[in-house]
Amino acid sequence: QVQVVETGGGLVQVGGSLRLSCAASGGISSFNAMGWFRQAPGKEREFVAAVNWSGDSTDYSDSVKGRFTISRDNAKNTVYLQMNNLKPEDTAVYYCAIRTGVLGVPKDNYNYWGQGTQVTVSS
Image 1 (cartoon, rainbow, N blue to C red):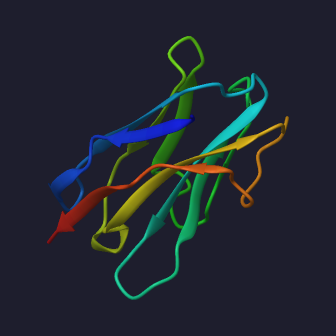
Image 2 (image 1 turned 90 degrees about the vertical axis):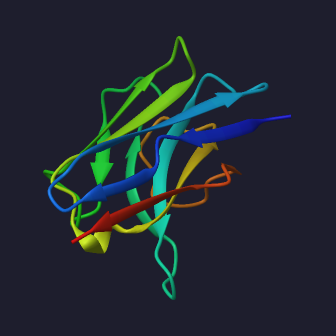
């Protein structure tokens, strides 16, 4: 049983920083991509960032490029999202997801999802 658990959300002021963590467990294959998505109230869930299985290839949405950094520690089966210079429009529930059996950095068709962690940016 694959489990995906996000931590690190919270309330932060505009311009501040947060780091999200996502720990995965339970029979995940070696080749997998890990990604972050978010969903704001009244909006559809959107892709934020992803990293490939080895950690040497990443992709970001245009809205977070240059402010967010995704990384992973395969020894811990953990992926991180460092979020800097946060803006009110970054307020959302952030979800971690895993897509198995891929070498690249996909933006969709993820197999396993966490329950989400709330990030609120106040002005």
